[in-house]
Image 1 (cartoon, rainbow, N blue to C red):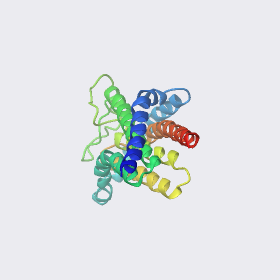
Image 2: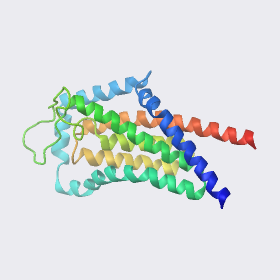
Image 3: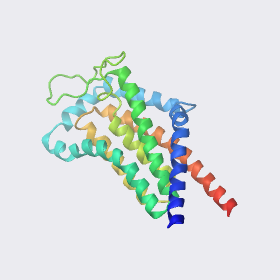
Image 4: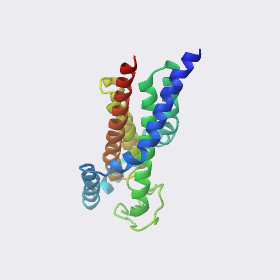
Length: 239
């Protein structure tokens, strides 16, 4: 029993250490080198979708009761699942004595935090007005640039989407051979993204969130994958 407990605890500690040590570095890494280009791509795509009127036309087409019925669960799921999923993965990894699942739990948690921090920062400066419940007039072009003019809970980019894609890409990066798992993760991310784009966000909020979230997931996934590989090599050497 003692041996059973020590190994999962040791693996959990290593994952927690990786989570804490690499959090600031991976956050900064999302803006380093060529990755900053993807942030610019998200901004450019947003400008195109807004100025072309696509955001408003998409809003007019997708705001109807039937679509809202099918897509509203994405709003709730995209808010609740990120809270519980890391703990579920950690518990499964601990019980199954699987170091990779434990690492995945810590990696997903870090990806969620970084994604949330980045979107909060963007929202604090862009202050985009979120869609109204009724059709009304076209407000898709309204941004309130400055500091905290629109808060950090609404606006551009979609935090639901950013976090969902960060989670999905992290999982795909850590489990490249598990294509079914990757497919489920990607489908989940797109459901969340399209779901919020048809309920509480503009389409361009979803597009920008998907791009930025994918960058976050790639950075975090590669970081934890490298750590897991190093741990495997150390274990083999020890043996």
